[in-house]
Amino acid sequence: MEKKPVISATRSLATQLLFLISSILYTCTSATAQELLVGFKANPSSSVSSFQSLLNDSTSTFSLGFLRVNQTQLALTVIHLPSLRPLWQANPTSSFRWSDETQLFFNGSLVISDPQKRSFWSTGTSQQGDKVVLLNSSNLQILQKQVVLWQSFDFPTSTLVENQNFTSNMSLVSSNGLYSMRLGDDFMALYAGFKDGKTQQMYWKHKALEAKAEVVQGQGPIHARLESDGFLGMYQIGKTPVDIQPFNSFHRPIDRFLMVQLEPDGNLKGYYWAQTDWVLDYQAITETCELPSPCGPYGLCRPGSGCSCLDNRTQVDTASFQCIDGDDQSGDFCTGSDDFWVLRRKGVELPFKELMESDTTSSSVEECELSCQRNCSCWGAVYNNATRFCYPLSYPIQTLVGVGDESKVGYFKVRTKSSWHKKMKVGIRVLGAVIVVLTGVVLGYGGYKIWNRRRRGPKRVLEEKTEVSSGPYKNLGSASFKSIEMF
Image (cartoon, rainbow, N blue to C red; front, top):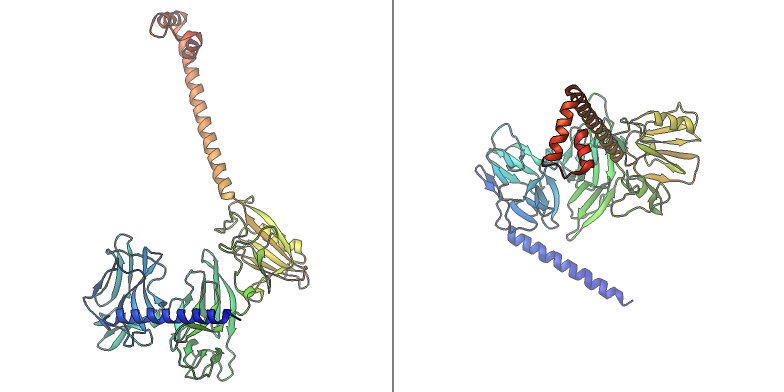
């Protein structure tokens, strides 16, 4: 009973600190420009520890500036100032140094460059703009006489904000680069790039329900928009949605700012800003074990029980989510058949098997395993004895779901430290070749000496012995003499 005032006091203190930080931010950004004109230049300041504001919207709710990343790197971002949460980032696949050599400038296009790292990003506008503005919606725009030449809303990164359109030629990408969201003909889906980002596996799909309007073939692609009324809608023609994904706050009279973000764990989540904090308002995937890899590679997720490992002998490292020591998940097994050992596990299934291709030609678990064993691009397979479906995995093994049905069997290839063994084998072969060559040289030279001595005859050999016994080598002894004589 006595702990409640302490908790209340702690929350009150945290709220006061947040308001204090917000006040400082607003004070520091009150002099920040509300437009950038041709000729603008800026460099990162060494005195800034987190965010250097360069351009604000008219309400000072959003700001474009340099965000410090891992102390030494920077990102050009649009952030939500009260929470310092990034909403958009220029060129998220490339990093720039926090250095006075890194420069942002506006010459009709917005450009950031780092000459030393040869990193470069530009809006690349075909026409030269005359100013850059940041709207109250967080949309960054380049204008030419009030005509929009370029805007950040057309190039989302990991986040969509309210009233922002998401079209079929766009994609959201999580900050770690592993997951993406795209639109199909009549659906939106989430994809995982488990194999060097090249193999895209769909792990969540939401098809348009078409309750109020239908998707008409040939009438153009669909698009999505996060509506301020509290839902993520899909549209094709006009303003009537073909689908609605309601948030918890749907149709509730709340003064809020909404956003959805593709998180590093692969989930699509919606939030609204409640003056002091972001409130979770929507989740595409509600069960942890249905996420693409909640327990990491070779992990096992049991609903309600958390994470363990497929090998049943090790505990998952919650910091790195690594179950197999030294696990290498690059490439495939097409470089040799001795690169892996096999891990089998009963009572497992894939979290998104309904979205995966299955092989119905395998009549037994042995055939399912054999088909994967013979395929060097296959990392494993899950077989269902009841349905006789075989699900081959063309990407490195991720988290499996633990189930009570032991007729569901998993066959998984585990890359050994074979890359090290291969290097050792190559090294040994090279060393062996060098030894063979050196041995040949030595034997050849020795044979030449013997032949040469015989050619010159006994008299010349006797002269050489006499010279050695009376010359500077007379104290070497018989062994040394024999050595010299041999070579």
